[in-house]
Structures are given as C-alpha cells and as structure tokens.
Amino acid sequence: MTAASRDPADLTRGSAEIARDVLRTESAGLSLLADELSADFAPAVARLLEIPGRIIVSGMGKSGHIAAKIAATLASTGSPAQFVHPGEASHGDLGMITREDAVILISNSGETRELVDIIAHTRRFAVPMVAITRNAQSTLARQSDFLLVLPDAPEACSLRLAPTTSTTMTLALGDALAVALMEARGFDRDSFHSFHPGGTLGAQLLSVAAVMHKGTELPVVAPDTDMGETLIEMTAKGFGVAAVVEESALRGVITDGDLRRNLDGLMARKAGEVATKTPTTILPDALLVEALGVMNARKISALFVVDETGALQGLVHIHDALRAGVA
Image 1: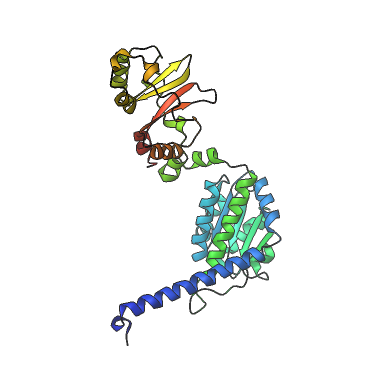
Image 2: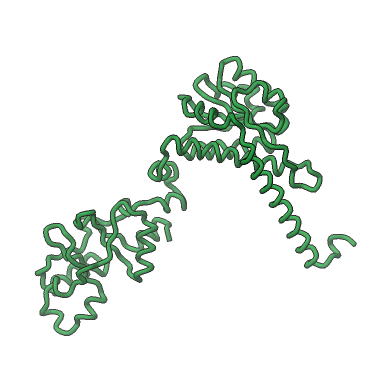
C-alpha cells in the first residue's frame, strides 16, 4: 500500500508517533548535555567576558545555520557577535577576525575542512577559540583553547544520520553561553529594550513613561473648580476623564461614570465633590503592558500616572497601548 492510498487517520497517527519519538530523543540529548556539561564552560564564559572585541561564530552546513543563530542571540543579549561563513573566510573574510576578538567554531565531527583556515588564523594571532564538537579527539578539539563537548546522543532521524539531536544540543549550548554572559554583564530589561526597540519584544518592554501624555495635554482641575468648567476641560482634552489636583498631588479622578452617578444637581457641585477619591493609578516606570492589564481588569480606558509621592506625572490611554503594539 502506498502512502497516497493509506487512510489519512493512519498517516496522522504515524506522524504523531514519529514526532513524539523525535522530541523524546532530542529531549534526552539535552538532558545528557546538562548532566555532562564540559568543565571548560565556565572558563570559556570568563574568557569571552574579557575580550574587548566581538565573538565570531562559525560553522559549515547545518552547523553554520546554528552558528548564525547563536551569533544573533549573543548580539541581542549584550555580547557583540558576528557570524562569519568559513568558505568566505578563506577568501578574504578572515580580516573580520581581529586579535581583540574570540571565536566559537562548531563542527559535529571536529574535522570540517572548511574550518581549517579559521583555526590556523586563531592560532597564528593568538585569538581565543572555543570549540563545540562531539569528537573530543578531533583536530578542532585539540587546537581549541576551550572545549565544549557534545555528548554522544543519537540523532533523531530514523537513519541516525541527519543532524537533528546534535544541532539541537548545539543551539541549546549557544543559548546557555549567551544567558551566562548576559547575566554576568548585568544585562537588564532596559538594556534588552535598547537592543529590541521594534516589534512585539520592543512593545512589551515599553514603560508607561515612554508613551504617557503630560503637561498641557492633561485634563487637570482644582478641587473647587465648578463642574461647568470641569466639563469644558474634559471635552477639550478628549480623554473622557479629569484629574483633580491640589499642590501637584492627585486628589481624585472624574470619569463619565462619576458624571452619571452625580447627575442630580451636577452643575451646582465642585470637582472635588464629584471625583472618585481613591482612583486607580500607575507608576511611570511600570511596563505599558502592565498598564493595559490594569485597564482591562478595571474596564477603564485611561490611567493617571503618579510618582511615589502621589504627584501627578501623566496619563496613559488604552489607545496608546494599541498604537505601541502592546494590545
């Protein structure tokens, strides 16, 4: 029976079992890698922290794809890094590797011939070199300053040949290096945002202070302001709310709900009498995504921003979160 003539349900079950086998095999490889982490890992991290230049990452074939991803992860987490293709390195790109750099070379066998020129270059100019390989007796391993050995875990394909488990372990080991370096450098949320200003990651790390309205944009009235003037201020600023402020401190907030609850004799009252005295607020350094969560939970569309003393700093509207790409 051909695959085309088999019942689709049988194909689905078969594929699902294959998927589970692959995931279990690769997961076992990662567990083995954690248990057998090379003794050179910590010294390698310490040396990479010391270099004044960049971390050059290289590999050929599937290892090259993994190397490019590791370089990107390092660069985005505070460790300047660059991928150099070993074939291009042999034709002039060796000039990208300076004495101030360090090199991470990846080869499952440790005998990838395209890496020979980079290995020779690092030895000639005393460039620190970290090797990631399965073969601890290979040329790459013997020439390295720091050796990170991959455990002899089986590849996940049925032939046990296609780079699967080995590339997953290498990728995870690169992540481990990046995170260890990141923590050693004290790379924090602000640093992360500076390297990821665009897209969803950038939006998730935006602070309230970065988008809040302030100054003359704010709808502000005093506690003794007539409600007629208060309504004019609310309408002019267009947020549907007004802040009742006394000596810079937020004393209350007037919303459309407050207006409806006080319709009887509203125009004879003062702003301080109508305002909610304990409004929900947020700090300027809170994340915008946190502000959005508060607004959703409270079913409100605007939040006033105050500092630790209660002084009014600004206002953030749900539309600000939408424009920033948080929602």
